[in-house]
Length: 304
Image (cartoon, rainbow, N blue to C red; front, side):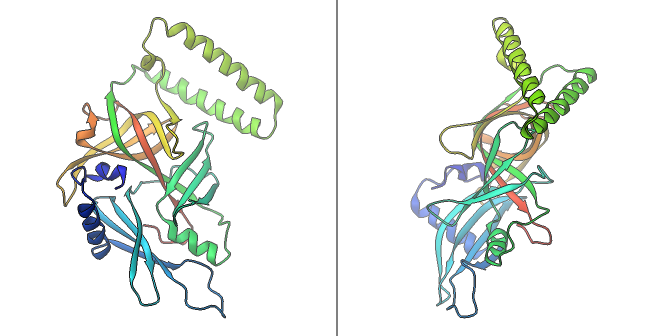
């Protein structure tokens, strides 16, 4: 069973029979259905197996996706499923690289966004538009954008740092300046590389002095870093911009949906009420482990 089922309100599912019953329900009562052939179709080729993805919403923007194939007798064979949260808005306009997972017809996206400082690896929710573009030879697609979202099974709420307007403006200016230096460093600018190195050394020295007297979370306002051995899971702390509670229409479990600002990256995240320690409110900070997902927005293409 998928570890992050509880994030969309199915924490009570423990048995394999209950899990399979939920999968059949999603396939038969899907909110959205998308289809494509698995491989490029040629004029002299035989009929191809049809790849299908069924998305079933259990609350606004969150649900379970069931992926499988139809054979020549029009029989559906289940392959795998994953819980999802549909993100809102545009998170990044940077170029995205897509790689297939080794064990099944699922895909990971890779995005180098300078705002975060690390390479973002995420689980792709809408694989059908990518497979269609690949099958028709239209890759790479220009003009794409990325909408990120995340699921969490454990997290806590932390109080915000005290900041006035001057502090906020100073932080924004410093982030803009650092992003420009990173862009220049990527182009091979030695002066920019040296400036970034000196800046990191000064930051390390400053934090090393403060850590003896101050709590680490009063020094570090936000962070975004890889977690564990799975490449699409991260440990984060970010500011809560918006927060609402929704209810799973089947299990009736309560789920928090939040919009987070983390290292200048804005994305939606959801977590089961029972897995969250503390009361989330805009302005406070969320700290926890997330599974990062994403929708690649293709021009003139229908997404989930």
